[in-house]
Length: 237
Length: 237
Image (cartoon, rainbow over all chains, first blue to last red; front, top):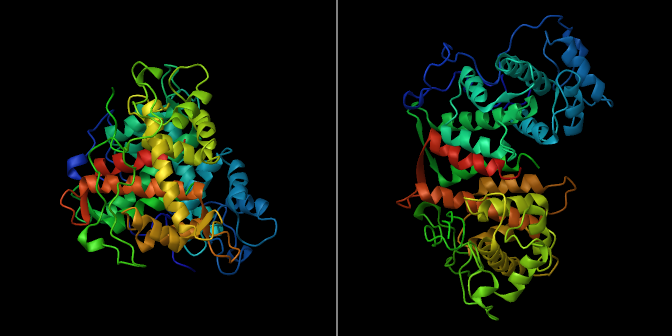
């Protein structure tokens, strides 16, 4: 199996929550400090499927839920074992919703296998599916009126529960992005929530890689700064 | 006049080229070290137009070329003094070409007046026009066979002539972005050149703001890192 990059849940590099002392989020609403990894955890799944269902180079792991395998198979019509962005969009819509291609491209970027960045294989798909499930649970927890939307403060609380402290300056940028000028309070649907979440979490993990002593500051060379940021910018293409 | 952010040519903050000692680009092809600001320089324009042509809060400066004013007026049909993204796309197409909306949004992000980020006024438009003119001259200089495209090594040389050293890791990311898998050499048209250029230059200037001693390294707090990068990511929306 080819190596995974640090964004996939199976990557061991950054499993803990991010809480530099200087940027610790104040306890609010009685929530506990974050304890989970943002990209989800590998848990035993019900309805295990025999490992021979998918063989070869990049197969589903034993124990993968049948829904995951069926969703993948439904769009991988040529049985190649890989799906592309529009197929991923279709596969996820069976369980979640129809994500924008923008969000789909970001998910592919974050969950891709570096050796094959334009397609998603079974293991990447299962990891992505699992992650989305955990994020949906978070989203639903904060969508108290079941409107399918959460406001920006709830977004901040949701991220905190995931171990991620959104700086107020970033919250302002997000608010201005989603402000349609109508004067109504700004709310995010699940698609936008995932888009925001993947950007924030992906960048947070890249920052953590440089903040090895967990001081809340990180030093980048020019090369490393550009090399970290530009792939995110180009991920949408 | 409202204050401009650091991306506009009139901003005095970062007028010089970026050449930290550790990351100096080796001299190639006999090119001289970079001497110009990437976002262009305010130069006297021929065909000055009386300053009363546009009055009020955000007018064209005296000496603005008539082509600039006419292009702006042609799309600002309600005479509001501001244009939006599709109008900007149309206005630039008269002099340059039809840029993708993706590039247009990036240009708006980089040249916007912070107090009115969704529209472009006369001064921002003139600055953007002037900058594109200088970038086109660079592009044409490196497009030696006048094909309307330059390859990735020419892109690197073009950026060097603009004072910007593209790390090889970033060049690899760009190559992978524009690689269509056909095996042909990768080439950029002017639209993609401007998109790449604005991303690289915008991020370089942000890095320079933190690298005050020009050592080639910069320390970011978590907040400052996220606050620098996320607006770029959201600029395309």
